[in-house]
Length: 239
Image (cartoon, rainbow, N blue to C red; front, side, top):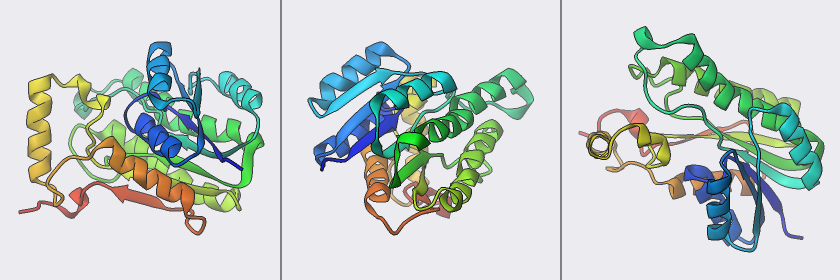
């Protein structure tokens, strides 16, 4: 029987690459996103084994209605994120911090909660955090707090919700629309500098993270894990 996978935030970047990877592996994929135009474009690209719906992951009622409406699923992936960009702590407002919390940490928790009634008992839930959690990078205090919160839920939920497997992928710098807050030239310069300091010698591609998410879905003996996929950036300079 064909497995069904829901990807919340699956209309661009890592989420869309993951949807493509899973469709190509023969699964039925349901993607969600807030932007109806992006949703339509994503579904056109993914083809006949994909369906989708516009859902705001920050809205618990909308999530409940969505999951109730689609019926049983085997796996859920959450790639929803909050506002992009780094912000020096001295300039950080509580409104910006709340937007980050609502857009990612609260959204991840809300999706997990809404999905439980229809998620296969021994299926999987995969979250996506980021390397900012614990990386001590200036101007990322808000990102570190949000992503560390996502990661902290993983071992707790893996034990509490067993035999459901709960994991997360923690990407390093990945070339996605998240970086659009930089202009094209600044983006290119930032990526070049980051690549030179990374053992892998490049920034990540969405497909790199998609294959890691696929591994966590497929491997039935892996749970409670935060999988670092950062090209070795956490190891320090490649020099």
